[in-house]
Length: 183
Image (cartoon, rainbow, N blue to C red; front, side, top):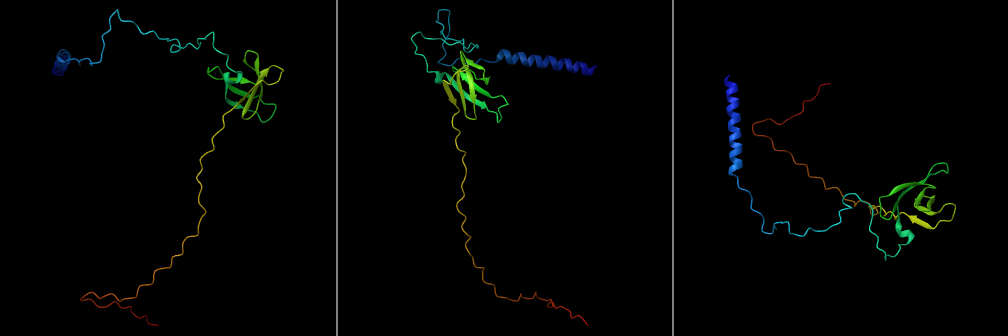
């Protein structure tokens, strides 16, 4: 009974402390550069369609047509070692997210993926000659440390031997002698 009474009064005290700190606390003042908003204030007009996931782009009527090569970007290739395996190319069209295209697959409109090798992909009309050649950017050479030619270590002469000096005998002790072995 005492424990239950103690728990109830502890809960009442904690609640009282919580509400007193809420009521007596002062709010931080607004910064000097803050502006109050009213119903008469003009709302900033911004295009939020891309933020909300739209991928369409506004086209200008007088905009010149981009060259065919500039519309496509080769991101990666999977070139087979044998002709029996399928080849893939990862191609981005008009700055959209890249998508995988299999050999002979349609890339954009009438363009299909004609050939793929280890650094290049060629696009063109189905059954026709390649009209667009895409190449992967050159891979920078890895940085390698180069050791200088190993020079033979310098010859260092050994230090001269120290002269032999007898150790002084401790006072009051007999010199150490090795006993002779009888034969």
